[in-house]
Length: 432
Image (cartoon, rainbow, N blue to C red; front, side, top):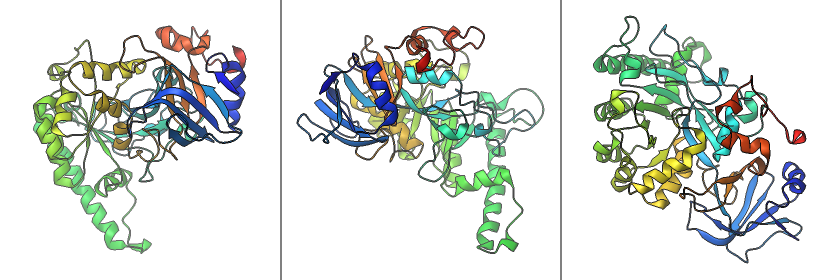
């Protein structure tokens, strides 16, 4: 028997947790991202995975619970390729290069900031240390599951790693204070080269030792993550703004044989052809009220369309709290208004970001076998009048606008996240 989507929310909550039977969502306009839109489509999920995505009349498993989503829009969960939710911390002022520090050891999996991400439709996040160091440390890829310990939300990518490496250039890691920081752009690049050369030597020793443990070099945590970069296993996520800094990031990657994902690229519109020629992806940000520092003054909403026309992969991120996680879709809408195609903007919110994290085989599109991460919206993703109404993660409904406590994370302002105020702090479904 068909059930209207929001009339049955309370009744259906037990089924979403158990996942004993397949669940079919029917009648919605579905954007798979990996293919054309499907009017009045059917999405079937079971045990955290997508069983099928198809047109009206597609097969629905016998005994499945059927939810009528007519008039709604279903699309993949958003992938935020650059965020600082959960309190990540990296290196400190004792060194400019800290490839050994791990955001995993700092992120708080019970942070109410994750509810904010769910309210914005974000289901997968790359949480990074800040950009105040040439290397601030290792990032962490997380899924917006319910979690009390970090392992509950941790994601391992296709290379078997839980995150990438955060690097930065430009004014943030240069710093003006004396000490271990470079002070100039040229010295920034020189210090990075010096450490990568050490990593190359360390890798040579490992390769020479082969399987002979007695010949292995002494373990060096700083070198281990850089060897993973040199071996193509760990993705470098490179904070960079000005065109000349973007070119330096490209140059460093070419010198040492890795392909960084370029983050921010405020002046990417100036060097879109060079980015495309290098075969690099860019994770960009939209700020509708620019300010903060001079090197970002060249930020333009035309960067998205410039990269698209050049043939370079492009995704979006929040850098939360630079852009609030609740407004990631809005960032893409602004890029569409500036000329980016709707198809590429949808991809930039989902599959492109997933590929940047080496997670493209699991998330980012609605395809058979992928994780059942999806959003239910009340209209066109790029309309100012549209809201996310439900966010599902691995077949579990994690956020629902019809619940007062959930809605508060969308509309309640920053007080909602205060452990002091806390009237909506850590509510459970049983408390509604």
